[in-house]
Length: 367
Image (cartoon, rainbow, N blue to C red; front, top):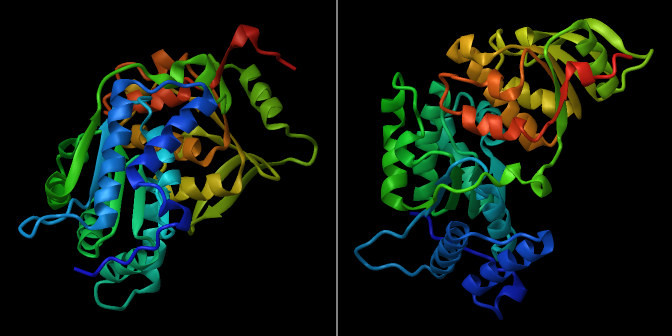
């Protein structure tokens, strides 16, 4: 195992790490007028204790050090909030916090730079380990065979290199890869997490995203579908006479049909975005370049195939994390839209979409 070399922040030397993390968490809560519940407090305590022990390198001769913390629980339970506070307080200069989808895109790009060499993934993993001694993954989950194969080996190398890892997820480790077709490929990664990580559950409780004070209002949606919905979307995007209509972009070497485009605003159809084989890399490309995105004709998802559902869920994840403005025209209200879906991630998606402002068509301004 590569020896660990840390550079703690100078002001951290006068304060124990556990105390520093807990103090920052309490201060962040006070600033926002929140109060942690017992599970959230237990989670930050576990993270603080692990970080202090990990930085100090305290572990027994016969026991390998705990590689990190795996924090999981239901939607809206405050996992990302706890991670934010922990990451900000961690007295490590070489640290990164990265969203699952963005990291996978980065991984693919960096592996391509090593094409033709032996084991590009191991080379990239060691590069990452040399850049960040503490690495925090948010929204850790696996639904794609490529992701499963990459992440399984990546985790192994990062742990061997001594990188401290903190992951948040909606799933326990055994549920990370729900697709039985390639769960076996991801089994070694699950075993690594279960053996080398401290597993911390944020148990069931309120969905804090539904508190009115917590709503981010990151866009809106209108239903049911009608001609007036198109005018509603145009208004929300702020399109004018300079708009370009019905064109095709080239995204990662394949075409993407666009209803309308103007500056950093883009309008797409659900059919183009989710019924065609676009990847999460395509969605990242869109959210990095356009700050307002409209999607028209979103159907009730129950009748859609699992691949179509997955693309929509991935897009919502990436759009939400990218902090864009999202505008949707839908066949029905959100509860009906996501009702009875076969996909295991609908709860997270519904929680995020409920933060959009809702407009019934009879309330929409038709002009």
